[in-house]
Length: 219
Image (cartoon, rainbow, N blue to C red; front, top):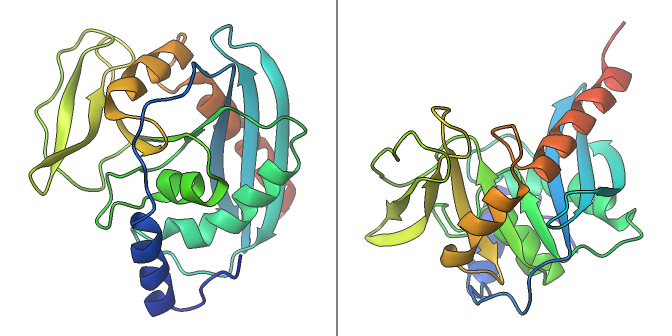
């Protein structure tokens, strides 16, 4: 695709893609889940894609890509800053994952098209946004027990869940991206969580990005 170079172009593309979002039940339980994360270092965007079998959480494949960062940092528009490197990493995979868990927002976004939704529409694959912090919406804190959750509301509708993946640890903000429902995302995320707050595929992608950043850090 041709990536926008201005905010006006980016907003127009988001609004067009938002009309193509489909929150429908999964055709089948995913057999493979891919975690996606990205970071920045010395003018580069570094992205990782890590594939696990599901629900066994056996590592299958990982890929990393780094590209020059060309879009400014603007909240709500990270798709255009991180997207090129993320797609480059995904394109290196020999496996076509059944579902992607993306470090970022799904439909819990001012225009309903966070990076997980953006990637889902672009790839036409099921995606879930798994964010460490809230971008939009209001919620009541979930109980302290693992697996407890409360709805995330934005503009008088439910756009995601606030999910406790570990006892007494800060919750994650989970929202469907594309081709999956709000009702399904909690079970999938919990099924990917082991001893840590983050789902294992997402945690592995985060760790891989951190290792790769050392190659771009000044001596």
